Image (tube, rainbow, N blue to C red; front, side, top):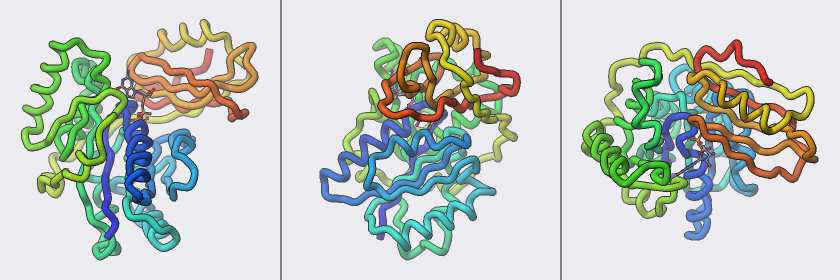
Length: 293
Ligand SMILES: Nc1nc2c(ncn2[C@@H]2O[C@H](COP(=O)(O)OP(=O)(O)OP(=O)(O)O)[C@@H](O)[C@H]2O)c(=O)[nH]1
């Protein structure tokens, strides 16, 4: 049987960071992990981050949950048929309800092959305090992801004061009393903690259906390199309903576009050593008007 772990958590909370960290630890233990990823946008930015040699399938632009579950089943079936692995890590889009995402795993097709270990929810602790500024639908999704975690990583602890850390843990535990909560920075958690996880059973009871989400994605292509300050000012001026940006940004004077991430008002630039297509995907609500500077 293949052990299956489902990674849930809001946009930009640290799921891909956790995925990379887990793959390394599993390999050290002699395990062969495979990855199934679900991206909300058209770009496979996250899958480019998974190291080579790890079997990977991805579902772009669809949702692993509900309507997308048939496609997901087919992808997982192909993985099982074509690849040799003993752990399957599933990263859902930050816009997925974790329980709906379970649909694909609990397909009768895989009953003999997959052993579901549980939902790991990566919670963005900084965003936790500002959850009330999210629209009601998005806030509800954010809370559902925490409510359904079997193991919760209270991530981004480096961005909180000690008092806030305590408060975040207390409040998260009140929302989900049966989950184990671990405080993390950069989603660093020992694989042992995931192995010990026990499924609470609440995963099987889907809560009240979520109101329809208005989350959308938009791909923006750069026609020419941008000035870094102009771009950063543009970021500061973005509406609060832009939750996530990722992709490659060409900066004036630099040879290759930089790998770029933005989550919750914070930007991260990384050098890129190949010429990646200069484009970013933005994820949020009411983003149709957003254009590049
Ligand atoms: N300060 C801080 N930043 C973090 C931490 N963990 C992750 N990040 C950063 O947060 C950003 C998003 O991390 P990812 O792991 O890509 O998040 P994700 O949940 O996979 O994002 P989506 O796939 O878009 O939902 C990146 O810039 C990370 O470097 C943390 O503990 N502290």
